[in-house]
Length: 196
Image: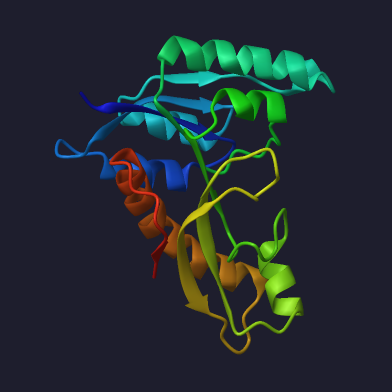
């Protein structure tokens, strides 16, 4: 029996597509839902084109009521009955209560070499710090922002003349390789660190 995977997005869904396309016939998991908090997120149309069920829970009508938003999110997820949730550019911070219900079953990809540069503007921060490398990390989601156990990392050199945009583009290429590899290992119960 294949594991069921729900993927949460807020934008174009490039990491979602890399995950979906990796889940071929020989994969131990299958995508059962792509959910976005942004109604016109480009990733929703891409998921539909791949024949994957989609849902939208627009966060804006809920205002500052995160509990109500997460209740609506939970309703969609429970209906899809995923074994694993992959956050793939989902730009909402989830509460500890919500995360706790999916503990050990939720992954995220973050564009830095964690524990460095949690949160936003990771590429600018790496450049400002004078780092000679950057990269991305896949980690389990815990109540601490970008703080769960790291399951995989890929590194890229920072080149002379790099901007946040050029660095982000090279890191994104690695994200598209790393996230599917970690998901497959995670589905098989492997949690030791994968590095590139």
